[in-house]
Amino acid sequence: MSEIGKYIYGVINSDSEELFDPGRTVDLEDVGSPRDAAEVVDNSGTSTRAYTVSFQGIAAVVRDMEIVDYRNMPKEALARLLVGHQQLVEKVMTRHTVIPMRLGTFARSDDEVTEILACGYMTIKDVFEKAQDTIEMDVVATLSDFGSFLQEVSQEEEIEQFKQSLLSKKGGVTVDDQMKVGVLVKRHMDKKKEMLAEQIQIALGRVAQNFKLHDLMDDKMVFNSAFLVDQNMQDEFERELDQINDQFEDKLNFRCVGPLAPYSFYTLEIKKAQFEEVDWARQKLGLEKDYITADEIKKAHRRSALDCHPDKNPDTPDIEKKFGEMTRAYKILLDYYRASNAVENDQGCYLNAEALEKNQVLVTTMA
Image 1: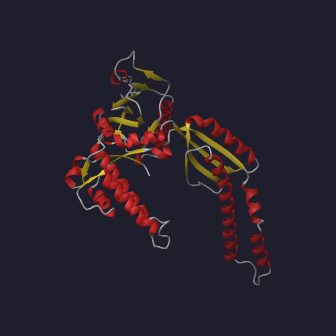
Image 2: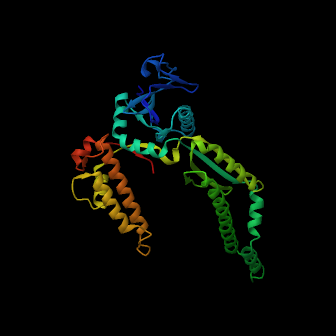
Image 3: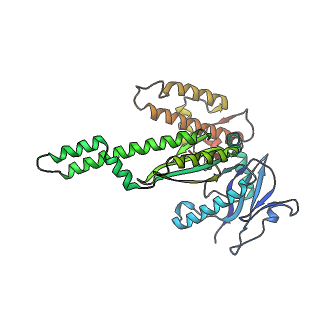
């Protein structure tokens, strides 16, 4: 028999009791407690409404759902669940800034949801300070005529000269020669696309707080980026995008999706603390004691950052890797410290195996 758990959509900076469904948002002034009012069930016996579980000024938006492993679901089923996830989050966004939870996050009870909020309280409050009143806008630009673009690239002087050199070559043009032409065309094509992308990034970056580049999915795609935008700047962002669209009318097609919750910047993830990982992080930052404070973690991070920052050590082999490991170690220890201290901010935490057994739940932001 399948197990029903609490699917967590995200967290809001509020302790209000509310209900959410795909069609409307419900106040609880007239309907009582969220759990009572959420008992509208579908044919599977699970609630069709989401409701809030609160803890000290923050609240998780949850819904009764069958616990499934999203990692092993068929793509079509996963896509349907993703759409449902986003639709509910968008409904919550009409009233609140939402810090989204990773797709497929479940708890087994309201009490476990409360425990997650308690363990992640410091991290979540810190994220809200950065994300309050922000939205995500995703922008994609594709070539409107790939054939014309390819022809334009092929007429570059370097490519034309190389082609001419092949025409006078004894023995004719070989397969290897054709591959060299292809590589040359690809290099120039990528360079032109990078120049177009940079113009788009600079223009939209002026009206955004941050951005995160995503992978290009095919050769026609020139630009794929998420922008973190103050919700009061949405209209200005869209006007800037319209101007860029007009500027590149003959070359590019633009698609904008939003406003969205800040998925690309602040999505929360629930993890289990592993002793080996925490111990590795402690050693990486040069911390020898089993009991450490937040101040000691931050000082160790600053000290390590000075020793292995790429800008200060440009000639050191693998310095980027060392700096990345140091940054990851700092994040691991800080996440564990915050989970160990819950709401308190002036205590320390133990790093031994016994302590980790008691403080296994970590709430962190996805990298």
